[in-house]
Image (cartoon, rainbow, N blue to C red; front, side):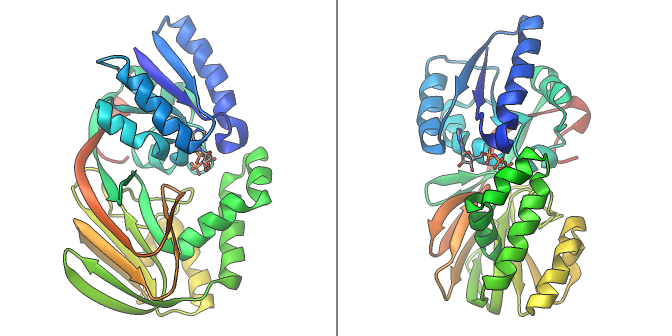
Length: 306
Ligand SMILES: Nc1ncnc2c1ncn2[C@@H]1O[C@H](COP(=O)(O)OP(=O)(O)OP(=O)(O)O)[C@@H](O)[C@H]1O
């Protein structure tokens, strides 16, 4: 028995459309499933927890949505032990991308019904689990601006989810001010001047395919931290095309760190996000929880990201 969790709003309505197609195929194949349409992130966590508790064993809990929708069900998945399946229907879909799950619906459904289950680490910040990356500073401000901006809806309607993030980057570039920050990695403190962003990553990409930590692997028991510091606005602007390829890691104003826990404290109040969803403001303490989750991936993709 599969539990499908559908966020009809994800990807500007892509979640609703994907489910209509998936449901038809599930019926054709006589697959046993329950469907749960969720309306908000907070309500979804509780509803999915209750739904999963009604049965001892689930083949999988399958999210029809984007990274934010996956984020909303992580605690429930951990409590039940059910593996995560993904039918990517968001604007970014970085979780699916990192696990080699096809963005095309039929192929993604094949991975759910006939895939392999691989272990994945999670990031724990406070009492909140994150699968892709916990970020604070510029990138969190971009997400806050994109999620609050009207252009996200327009871009989603035009099937140009990535464009929304590019607009958000330009908007934030004009207004954001860098400041001092300290990063404590496995109890070793490093201080940085003029910090634009600090991202604690479990998967290589976020923000719709930005390869912020190209070496990050979901099953290595480690988190990868990317700190961008001491550069000008123009240098930061020129950094973005390099993040699409992951080649920013060799720039002199980019420091990459790796460990099992990271605490980040900015001198000024900064927003933080996990999987693109708000984690509030203030200092961040993030720990890697090795192999906490299982994810269904295409058999050909094997363990780890494709
Ligand atoms: N389970 C849920 N049900 C309904 N709404 C949710 C749920 N989880 C999160 N949301 C809200 O729906 C919004 C969109 O969902 P989601 O993040 O999955 O799609 P997206 O933003 O289009 O794609 P992505 O996160 O991959 O860029 C979230 O930002 C959040 O506000």
